Image (cartoon, rainbow, N blue to C red; front, side):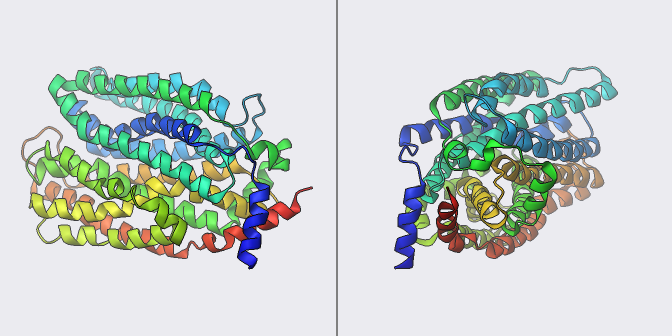
Length: 459
């Protein structure tokens, strides 16, 4: 009976003008462009630097970590800036409008390293990579924050996340399957620049469509304190004492390190372990096969069992992927089967993660009386960026440690061993840690009561 009363109270707290399917579709479409950029950089930039631009693996590894750590720091600043933004378009939407074109230009520059000598290439790589991550942050943080501002109702928020998951899957598959064949067909730097041009045009168009077709609700009608600036010191104290935000942020670090390894190290595996770079398109598609299947069942399962329980189950299942690969690492068939199983571990990232992050904002408001939607998203995004940077750094450093030399047809046995470590053994450890963290996240049980309590506090 209490649960039913809570549902009634919660329903009264939600604006009658909830986002419809068309609005959610356009929000998801915006993510299509964002994830095109993220996937191109996360999957192919390391390989582009080492095997096309001719930059050493060790230098690339350091660049990946330094740039991503810097990126993480800017995330915090961007989140604070979003929380303090006041415009007729809201808090998050104007940034999506302003930064779409700069992001399109920066991705093209990133994959256009000129032949200006070893030192010149490194300097160019640092400048263009840091430029890209600054602009990417100015787009991605508002996008993630907008999800929490469009609706406070848990099912709508989950549906928004599922829409983003559909477009995330489509854009990831598009880049994973087609980028390498297209770039190889054109050849050299020109091939990768052409792929980047496509992504640059896509992010410009989809950003405008997402801005034009979405509406912020929660920040205007439900969060009174959004009308005043919260001192950063107080906001950060509330953030770092929010236990569920801490859990989900560490989860982001682990999950995105794992994702970076599966994506960034995969092309080295198909090239030097399986013997054919073209296999990477197949492996990339198989990795997302569970997600494709999951879209037909996940929405109903989430309503019945909750985001956390489904995420925990598929995380446990994903652990068995690397174990299967160990049976015969040099077999395409065995590696493919292991990849499909491992793909279940990606489901939480694609389908639940942004909704779960935004749920921690309600917990923080309920627990500490402070709502900082932008800061919550930017700080969790810091975990994603650190994870992606750590994954990229591990690829570069371990390849360099193994004596990897870009462009060679045959690598040394130590380099081959490092490729195996990057693709099988480290991902196994990370999959276990990811599962443990998801087991610790138990906010779903409290969430209905939290929303009911927040509704009662309103004047």
